[in-house]
Image 1 (cartoon, rainbow, N blue to C red):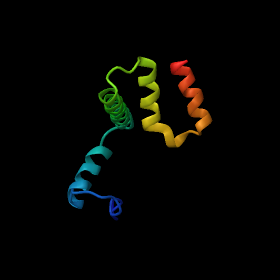
Image 2 (cartoon, helix red, strand yellow):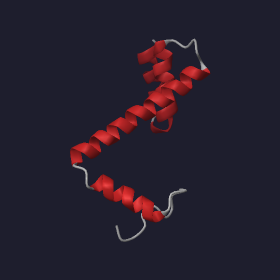
Image 3 (spheres, rainbow, N blue to C red):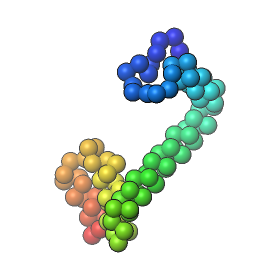
Image 4 (cartoon, rainbow, N blue to C red):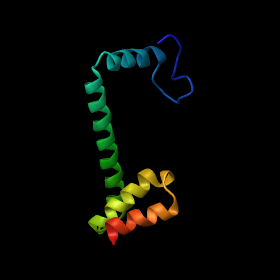
Amino acid sequence: MGTNPYKNLPSDTPYHILKIQHDIVMRKTSLERLKMCCDMADFSMAMARKLVKDKHPDISEGELKYETIKLVYADCYTEEEMSRIRAHFVG
């Protein structure tokens, strides 16, 4: 890690600490790194779900799933695709 790949990212972590973190992660096996990514994705979705649920405590399960997907992925889909996704979960 010769150059600083983090130079354009906002961070309160000094570069030498980021390098240590990077080196620790890179010593892990590919499977361990994949598991870390999956765990972080699961955690992120759980936090998004909680955010929606906290805002709308009486939301139905289908609406909760849709609103969570919308919160996380809205910029990945067209309005038409989002309508189909909503129809799948809400009916």
